[in-house]
Image (cartoon, rainbow, N blue to C red; front, side, top):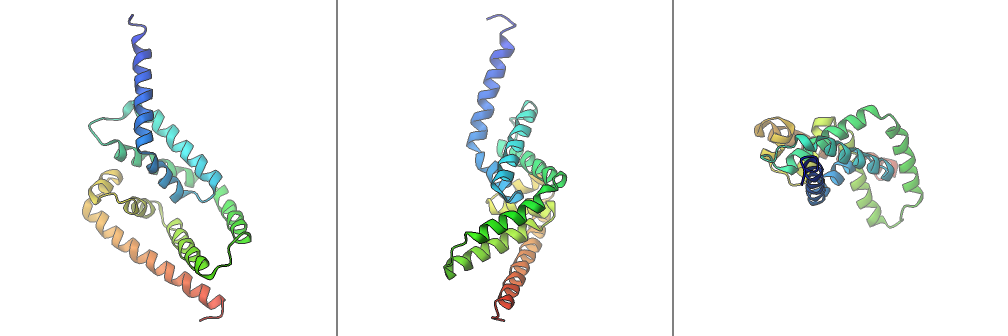
Amino acid sequence: MSQVDTPVVNAAADDARFIAMLEAHRTIVLHVANAYARSVADREDLMQEIVAGAWRSFARYDPARTFSTWLYRIALNTAISWVRRSSRHASRRAADDSALAAVAVHDPDALAIDDDVGDLRAAVAALDDLPRALIVLHLEGTSYATIAEILGITETNVATKLSRIKTHLRDAILRAREARSTRNGNG
């Protein structure tokens, strides 16, 4: 093999390694996109941006660090930037909610569960960038140490912030339930 062929072989090996590592950790991309985008089209767009960003940064990936931590950092940074620069999400959310309401199942138990899930999603979506990233990582089962490494804060700070976020989410969900109950004449 000539020296000219060596970079092509290395690039192909890097491509295969990136694809294999990304495939093994694809749920990271999916879960971050689900947390930051509500419509299917927006989630697909965001997932593509996350993968493209990871691909562009892969040459700088340090194998001494875990790939999942590196990918989380890229995914969260990409998602936060995507939300900040995109004003189209507010109008799409309203359209998505209207479409979902039009096809909703009228089973009271299913509607109650849907309401709770919707309340949680709305409460998480209303969080600022860092708290949303924290709760997404926590719900993924990520350890405090890994969350601290991904976000560049201490483990103690992670624990404190998560406690406050959980209280905030619990209060937001209770307020939403009370408002729904009042609207339905049950309060």
